[in-house]
Image 1 (cartoon, rainbow, N blue to C red):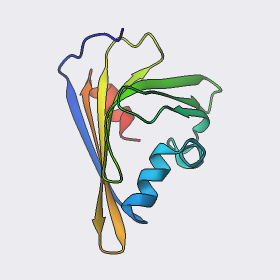
Image 2 (image 1 turned 45 degrees about the horizontal axis):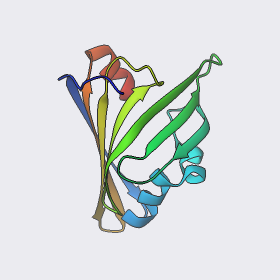
Image 3 (image 1 turned 60 degrees about the vertical axis):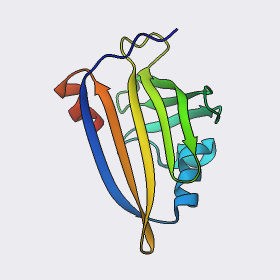
Length: 132
């Protein structure tokens, strides 16, 4: 059972990307597509497992430049294709806190604005690392 949610900091990141909401939703929810783009520069996505249903779990593996492997895991809370996803976020199965991520896909002309709201972040240092 995940730990209880605690209040914390919020980070909102917006970026307009070429593609339709349908294409970008698929890039976030299909493991092979997700592996192609996930993570900041220098981080390799080594695995993506998604049970895309409300209550379904996901797990994404990241290999950092120093070789360290971190697994992000959580549960889907809301799925509204192709416009919105909401899921919990934590490092590994024994995460000390449960963060929440909401991703919205909003058409903007020829592209789509991707709006990521990351909530319940424990401290400013962690929030700034999520910004990368």
